[in-house]
Length: 142
Image 1 (cartoon, helix red, strand yellow):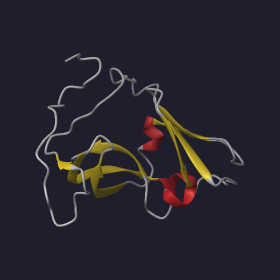
Image 2 (cartoon, rainbow, N blue to C red; image 1 turned 90 degrees about the vertical axis):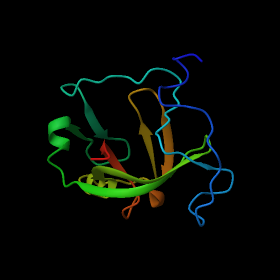
Image 3 (cartoon, rainbow, N blue to C red; image 1 turned 90 degrees about the horizontal axis):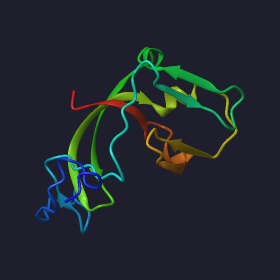
Image 4 (cartoon, rainbow, N blue to C red; image 1 turned 30 degrees about the vertical axis):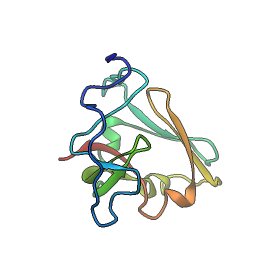
């Protein structure tokens, strides 16, 4: 197994579980936290970390790590259902709601595009991320 393709913690498929509808068909329950990646996880020094909202906004907005941590924070508990067929239940996260972040800009967009430090991107309709449906999290499990 190549360390560059499979991240530590990935141990292969587990047994499928039936948990009263919490596990979608074809998924299996995972108690660990397998992370599959196309390469190593990038390390970003907190002194150079930033988060920005730009594009179809009146004024782009940028937060440093310290500024981001002054924003109102929320804790959420959610199930994760990964496209690689594993599910992890009751995961605990802490971060800032997208509602809080987007309230600080005036925007004329119907979609968001999220860019990660490692090069991954995804686009989502705004209706799928507003009203308490999405967060930028920085803390897992306390």
